[in-house]
Each structure stands twice: as structure tokens, then as C-alpha cells.
Length: 54
Image (cartoon, rainbow, N blue to C red; front, side, top):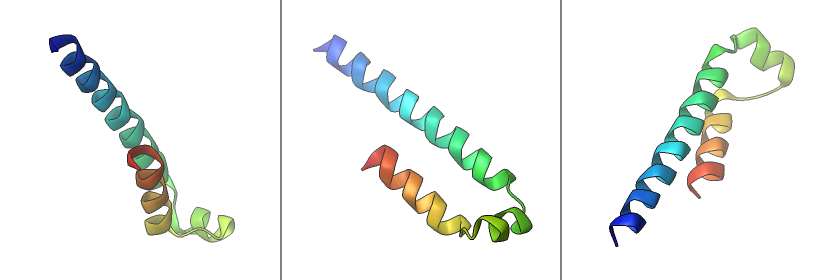
């Protein structure tokens, strides 16, 4: 029971770290970078959230 809780906590922390890393990378793109990629920052953030958290 406690080991399950610890496992879930570790998984949650790992997901949050991965999410934060990706958000930082997306935030580092300039508007010009995004235009060159034909990408939308908010859509990218939405997609990574969906990918990581479901």
C-alpha cells in the first residue's frame, strides 16, 4: 500500500519534470522560430499536456 503510494508519487514527479522541461523548451522559441516552424505555442503546449497527462 505505501509502496504503491510511493510509486505513484515518483511517477507523478517524473511526469511533472518531463512536462516542465518541454514547456521550457517551447517557451525558449521566439515568435520567429515558431513562424518558421509554422507552429502555434498554445497548441504545442496543449499537445504536450495531452501526451503526458492524457
